[in-house]
Image (spheres, rainbow, N blue to C red):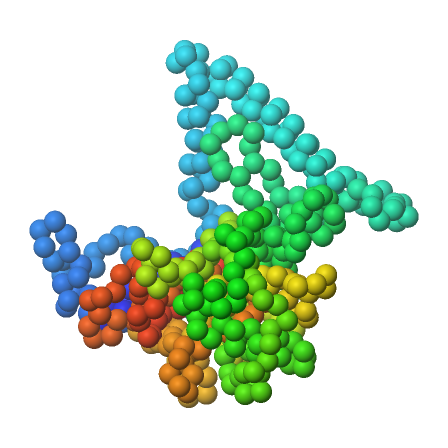
Length: 456
């Protein structure tokens, strides 16, 4: 009942937080606010708006009234983020509160100035060493024109801030409690350039073909090597061997790598070109900003561990998978280049000789497929939640549909809350909801970047 107005307010706020706001986004914000006002009465009828003394039967909220002027203000002044009070508050903390906490509470002004001066020197030193370590050399435009005959292995010459950020992210402070953002894109480039000696191969940090995402695994796998049959039992994946055979077959014939679909019958009696696999129980998945591709975001941990005493069915996470890496674009387009999956296993085939079989030189993933519920001519959003509704894909014999894909086909970590229906299953817990439930929501509010990617 209250899905429409609550969802509309969430969408309004998410759209307003974009780094870039177009006329199309402004129209969507107007529609969201209009939807809220058209359906807000159901919240009062359900007595869901409550205060200390019980239900409240009105919408006399000044901040809610203020929302009417947001779109016109954006048209006149630009995106709201630049007017956020957070910048002022953060500046007050940096330049007043933090320095004052290091004084003796006497003659504040000179002590604050001395504190800031010393921090400025430390920051400049940190920036200089970071640029030096990244192999970047600052030049103006004229110098760059004259240096066209530089050797390929020479320093990286830059003359703009944008070019600098493409090669060296802003460094973390040498002092203070801020946690440093790990840039796996930079690490992957260094590995490819041979700048990290003795790194195990295949490299544990790598990017997708189009460099949409960077993926990082720990140096060592979890435990000893497992035979394919033992891995199948450990992860409760009875079709693992057949899935690997189907993957090898598709690689050899040069076909597509779909997630799901019919498997050739002739592969059933084939032999795998390897016997053992190494497994990892989690990875780090890092992406770039939707509106600002130069911006590197915080990495997400994506799990794929086998069943244990706590996680009876194993611990996996929802992911968006790219099914056709030859098609470019920054949004999510189902039935064209993306599908939603459930990551169940991360592995590497252990070659029996010096040359790994085709398609097995890198890391592989076993992913189970979810289908987007469609109406009419394709996937559509649920009118109440504004989200895609998913159902677990099954084969003709009723078994869950899963397949092997290269690990670099992963594009995003997503949250998949169960769709309860009229009554929730009382057995559901956080440890089993992904395995007991048959229908899910693709939560577009999981991150702002995912929201914009799904809302294009």
